[in-house]
Structures are given as structure tokens and as C-alpha cells.
Length: 41
Length: 492
Image (cartoon, rainbow over all chains, first blue to last red; front, side, top):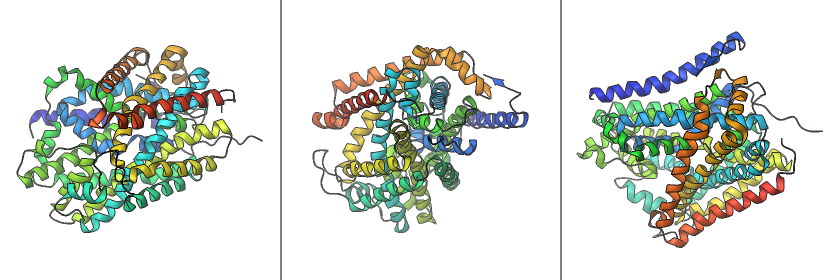
């Protein structure tokens, strides 16, 4: 598979699965700290 | 004494239900093809742009509208401006029309699980699907008789929907614990099988190799917005209804992000299962991958069975896994669409939930009979086109106008931020007030112009009128009637 296809594969994985994991981490952090922390986008 | 409103028993239940409603057949048979057709890996750039500027903002709007109104789509619009509740009723009607034909596709999946056991399609999957399964007539004017195996499938599907919705949102929360992970597991099995076949790498290369020149074409960006809008169950009353059962302190923004990422992540992954299999088929037949690429029902019921027949071992097993995946993908969306109509009807009329659901299932089954006739496939195609291109886009546009322009995007955003784990910035206002309405308005107007100039799909003008324009006009009139009838009643 050409390098450009590999790069798009990594790009897609980072945005989609990285984004999902980031959301889970925020939900977990909030659960532990009872709403003291808030991320901003 | 008023019965207290049900709540989701857990956050996981709500997110899985929202994800299950969003993830449907289109994630498997539409996204990979759209991605391949619009620049391969380069399509991810407009796709993510559309996700962030239209998908996430509208998901937040639907979650927040449903939660603040504690009611379905019409009540959510009514809570902001009573005269906009027609849009909510229109969303419910569109959802119900969708589920009437969606169930027939699921009926094909039931049948194909059975056919997989003996690979009944043989060497000619195309002839089997169109000739034996559908027994397709020459056009929508010839309905022909009812196809009994599909009728049995559709009865099974409606029975499953009724059973799942029997105890309301409580039973939905339990069912999605199975019906959301199961298709993911099936997809993983199919992807592993596909990627270990000869020719798979060629297929995946076609899927992902970027053609950045395509990004200069505005149609690619519109395709990305279209895919996001149709894939996330937006404008279908479902997410509004689900959000109305959220407890008062429930999060909005993070739930929307999780739903969007999960849905698009599934689509992206589905591309590997689909294109690795297509690469294998191209390798077996000895043609380039582009010669075997298909989308929609043709991919699922013609190309994929052909691939399954060529598998070196366990072909019936992988066939059954594929059609079980389609079935479980569809069932979440199907019962969500029914619930999207049942919740506001229950809220507006005060009739018990189960009674509303039973009636909706009976009416849905009766209406759905048209799609199990020999000419039903033509009607499915026409109705789906008009509902998707006009109905859902109109409702999403109405949501943007109601929240962004009438209620005030800043005020709405502050409401979301008060209860959310992730505080959203002013970019959200720009998306809801400017970007999304502009794109949706353009999509709607260009579709209208195209639809007026030439009848859809080469079908006769009368069929486009009956199954398309006429149906949309009647749906709008019924929505306006329901809005005027029930607006006087108290919300929630």
C-alpha cells in the first residue's frame, strides 16, 4: 500500500478513535472529580 | 395522578441507543463507496470538516432540544416557538415513513441469513436477488403479487420492534447492550477475514489512496455534508425522543461527541471490510477493483454474496455473519424510528406508550406491505430519495433556524455548557447560524431544482408525484394539522 494511503489511514484513526477515547477520558475524569473539571473546545 | 417520566437507567444505555440509531446500513454500504468515489483518503478531510461544522453541532442541538423540553420532536420545537412544532411533527412522519421501507430491507436480510446456509444464490447473485427474491416488475406501475418470504421477514421485523419497545425506554436500554456490540463484532470478523484474502491490499488501497485534486470540486464537500447528515440520524425525531428521557443533570456536548465519533469510526472501519472483500473479488475475477465497486443494496445483496461464494472455506458461516450484521445494524435504527414517533404521540395525546407502539407497528406493517410486492423495490427507491433529499434536509434546516436564529445560538450554547463536561466555544454559534444553514439551504435548493427539471431515477412523472412530491405535501399538511391540533396542550 502506498505511503499516502498509510498516512490517510493513520489520520482517520487518530481523529475518529483518538477523538472517541478522548471523550471517554473526559467522561471518566468528570465521574471521578464530580464535575470539578471542564474541558473547552 | 401524573406518571413520572421514565429516565435512562444509565449513561451507557443512552449513548448506545443513540449510536445504535445512528449506525445503520448506510455506514456499511454507503460511506465506503462515497469515500472511494470522492477522492479516497482525501475525502476524510471534507468528511471531518462536515462532522465538526454540521454533525456535532446538530447532534448537540437535538440532544439539548429533547432534554430541555422533556418531550419528543414536536414538543422540543414547541418549547422554543410553538409555531415551529410542525417541523417536529414532520420529523416524526418522515421517521415513520422511513421505517416502513427500512423494515423491508431488513426482511431481505432475514431471508439471506437463511439463503446463506446453502449459498442459494449460486453463481448468479444478481439474477437470484432481482429475479427470485424480489421478482422485480418492469416498473412502479406494476405491483405484482406479494413475495411471501419477504412478507415473513417483514412480519418478523415488526414483531421484533414491538417486543423491544414493549416496556419503553427501559427495555431499549437493555436491548442495545446486545444489538450495538453484535454488529461491531460481526464487522471485526468480516474485516479480519477480508484482510487475510488475496487481493485485499489492492482493495484497501483503492479505498484509502488520496486524490487531493478532488478537494477542489465543491460536489465532494457537499457529498461529505450529505453523508454526515444522513448517517447521524439527524432530522429523524429519534435523537430528540431519546434525549427527552435524559435526567436533568445529563451531559450534552460530550455525549454528542461520543455518538458522532462512534458512528463515523464504525463507517471508517466498515470500509476495510468492504474494500478488502472487493479487492478479493477483483483478484478472483481478474479485473481492476473499480469494475466491481458497488454501493447500496447492490453491494449487500449482489456483490457481497458473490464474494461469499468465492471464499475458500466456511462460506455459509461468513454469509450468515454478514447478513446478521445487516439485520442487527438495521434493528437499532428501526425501533429508534418507531420510538421517535411514539414518544411525541404519547406526550401529546396522553395515551399509554404501549398502546401507541402497538398501533404504530400495525400501521407500519400494513403500509410496508407495498414494499414486499414485486414492484415494491421501485417504490422504496422513490420514497427513500424524496425523504432523504427533501424531508430530512428541511427538518435539519428548521432546527438551525429555530435554535440559531429564533432562540439565539449564544443563549442555547450557554444552556448546553451549564450541564456539559465539555464547554463549547463560539465556533458552535458560527456553525449553527451560518455554516450549516447555508450548506443545507444549498443542498435543498439544488435538489429541488434538479428534481423539478427531471423526474428522479427515470421513473414516470406520475410515480414521482405519488411516491415523492405528493407524499411530501401530504406529510407537511398532516404535520401542520397535528401542530395546530396539539399545540394547545401542555408540553411534557
